[in-house]
Image 1 (cartoon, helix red, strand yellow):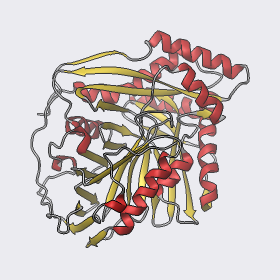
Image 2 (tube, helix red, strand yellow; image 1 turned 180 degrees about the vertical axis):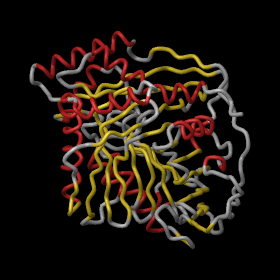
Image 3 (cartoon, helix red, strand yellow; image 1 turned 30 degrees about the vertical axis):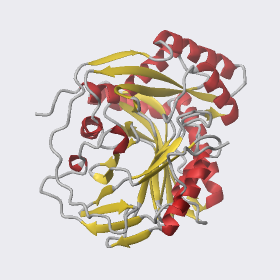
Length: 433
């Protein structure tokens, strides 16, 4: 059952949303992330890759839904808000006009639920085009004039501690999962672990975003309602009738030696264990998109995606949309994919609940944005951490690994450690010179 908190009003009871988008000429040298003011963890939003994307601050409206129908509840709310909105859009690109940023809990049973946030101010960039959107429930919202925000605050001393399971206990869970797979109960399961973080000073989201963007430029650097990270995986993009999805499954850690890493990439591309894991994930995405798309393009073999800390097997799936399904509804049809759950999905999901001993929260759930037309981009919340809503000096970091019959527990612990590096480094990075 889905519930909506009383603090989030019914859109029918609100004054219509008023939104104005105009072209923007930023200061020389400005970046999207440099324009973010100190709005606090819950009211800072970001979706940025290689300098392009969207950032926002403030909160004109928001809604939270929980339970099995959380996607549908958010979709209904946003359609209602968008239908009654008064929009002046002088730019007319995907991401202009009113925009909602969202992050969705992995599990329906999670009390954290799913949240959409409509920022008061959104700044967007696509190549040489910049724009700013101001949104409110007032009849005449003040037009923002964003400026470079200045210095951000370092988190100070950072202490890491085991989360729900120690590495040894988590390796035991991996071993149990391998036994279940070898017994024929399922083909694959994705197991995650968490890490507790305490910081000397409240976490400034902008500190994390800027450091993640510096080191992982090929990822989407995101922030929604206190969830912060850099995901390499595009769950689904809908733009003017074209639907695309990037599937990542199968991982190997980089050494920093280019020649050695090329050899590792070649071994990854030949690994029967990793190719099997990847095939499950690609099949689950293609099957979910097929009812909504025609002219599906599913490459026969993956390519190796090189990130600064790891390499992944990757496949880009594409199709032409044949109905009016929104990007959020497409994300709902894809979640949870084999890349974050397993195969068969119901069996893998039950095993996750049994072996992980934690609430994933919004880790491994969809995260991204949607505009009033339904276009948008939704990634999978990976390489991320959640700032606690009641204590900005505490975070939970997450990482997961795909477990198949040939998985070795010690190797999976090492892989999870590699996937925790982006957030660990972002928290402990020295100040920029």
